[in-house]
Length: 273
Image 1 (tube, rainbow, N blue to C red):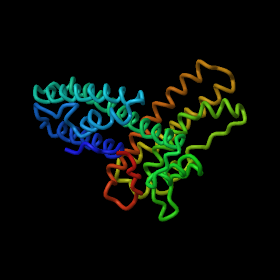
Image 2: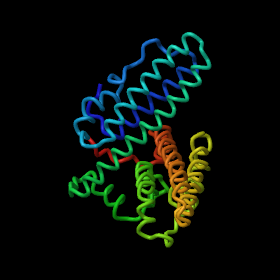
Image 3: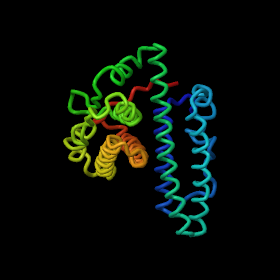
Image 4: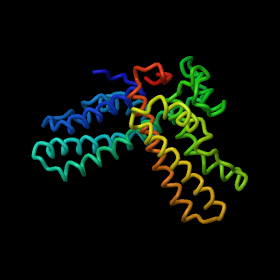
C-alpha cells in the first residue's frame, strides 16, 4: 500500500474506489466487508501523510471527517444490497455521490492552498515553477497550444481560484467588473469546440457543459444582485454558484479518470509528496 501518494493520486484513488462501488452496486455484488476509512488508499494517505503535511490547513480535518462519513455510508450500502432494500440503497447512494463531491472539492482546496502558500513563501522547486507561474502570473488559459490538449489539472485549480476570488474582484472593481461568459472562458471554449465532439461517448462531458453554463449563470446573478445591493439574494446566488462549482470540479476529475491513459489530456504536475 502506497503511503506517499500526492494529492492528485489521492484524488484519483478515491474516484476509482467510488467508481468500483458504483459498479458493484449495479451488479448487486457488494461484499459485506469493505475497506475502512483508514485502509483505502485515500485513507492511508490522509492518516499517514496528509494530516502531517497539511496539519495547518483546516480543510484536512474536514476532509478526514467527510471521508469517514463516506465509508460509514458505504458500509450501509453493502447492507442495503445484501438485504435487497432498494429504497435505502437509492438514498445511501445519493449520499455517497454527494460526499464524494465534497471529498474531491476539499482535496482541490488543499491543493490550491498549498500552491498559494508556496508562492508566498517563494518555495519554487523545479517541478512546480511552471504550474505556479501559469496559475498566478499568466492568463487563465487551461488549453495547451499543441493540439488543443486540455490542461485538466490546471483547469480544475483555475476554476476554484476564480470562484473563490469573484467576490473580492467585485469589491475591488464594483460595477466595472465584467465576467466572462460560459462560452468565452477557456474551459467553456474547450468544452464547446473540442470536448463535446471528441468525447461525446463519455456521459460526463455533457453534464460538464450543462453544469459549467449553470455556474456562469449563477455568477452573473450574484453580480447583478450585488450591483443592486440586494445582499440576501446575492448570498443565495453565490451559495448556488459554489454548489455548481463543486460539481464542475468533480466532473473534471471524473473526466480525468476516464482519460487517464489518453494522450488527449496533459498530465497534471505531480508535485505533492
